[in-house]
Image 1 (cartoon, rainbow over the protein chains, first blue to last red):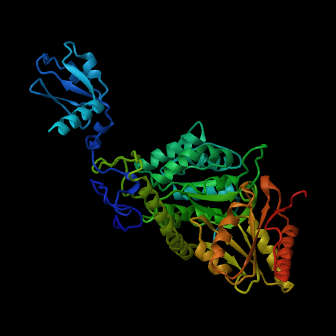
Image 2 (image 1 turned 90 degrees about the horizontal axis):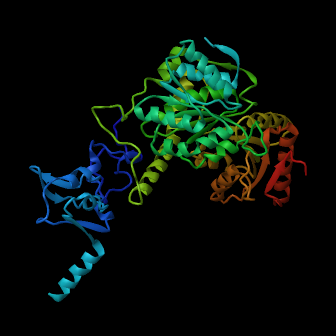
Image 3 (image 1 turned 60 degrees about the vertical axis):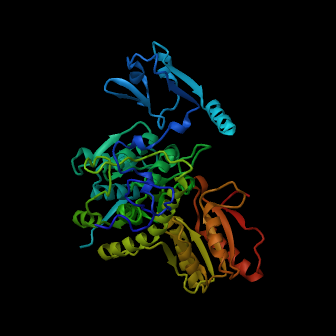
Length: 122
Length: 393
């Protein structure tokens, strides 16, 4: 059998394509050689509004966990743990379905501005 | 033993498909390709092949199903013509960018409108930029031979691109021709068993195909396709040599006919090359130094071979059976002229658009082209570089 990579634009059978790879190195036709690879595609930077958890109000019913379309709510031992901000697209469904309003949505821009202002004060 | 048969071009293509015995064929009938699918489907129903034949509702679906089958790991084929190929257009890009070795005959026919079912190359020229390898056939014999070689070219690990095999609608496809067919065993051994490197049904080695590829890597993947096209030139010649060993018929990137000492050359694809060769024979008897260059491959464009074959001539006429509406002549003219530009030999290159919608290319027409070329050499100038042959002017 002919070796897979003879550098005629067939790419490498690699599991990780990195930005420093050239056209001869990246996989052929953009094929991905790993199952369950959706996790490595981070969609968190699409977000314009961010869910923030209010610990005091939360009753750990996990309705948000069930409704999250991106599986971005992490529950540990049957309790709300954290948001997966690398994949959360900020759709706000969790905040909408929460029966006790324990999730607030904040503008990413506004949060950035506040962070910047705080840095300037220091 | 030589096995000579009298069959039409379409039958020759179906015969080749029978001997290749692909795993899946998904096709939709369209004039003048209809017979290919019709004859092949009878092979399927008679049990002469063990192909899965998928009847689909359009050519878009035909190519889609072929792509699906090929990605799953099958040796898959389809066939089409004209508007059918136009309807496939979107999926042809998917086939080439997924690097699927799909072989599909294209029985060349004009594109509407006005409605016309006869031969020209507008359909093939429509996909010349889609990343598909294009083989062209002068007659039924070449259609048969090219079909068998196309499988090997497409599936070569350096290439992995779709290959279209073009033959002239009604001229090659429906005319009865005497040709030599190989026996089933020889073809079977030549094409071999298809062993895809990676395929969707390979549960041991999972692979995702058809991924999202935005500005970050799309460019690089296009570059890979160019490299595969470049590699294809060598592969086409290699496969041609191997095929010569089993058939005795020679195939390369181009067919140079009496060009060694020629002053004037005509560059023309497909069946018209046969007419041009006939005229060349007659003119050679009169002592004129004339020749014909027939590109067998149009994509990838064999410009090195064309430069090499035409470097000694003084004037070249490129005959195009398709119009681009650029007002700069036909599609092949642009490519041939570009190929010759760097030679700096001041070769005069002129264009003749001919035979649109199935209009005959008469021998007198070809003679006129050589007359014009002789005039260009005599006067040293070409006044009009885009001309129409056999047009009411």
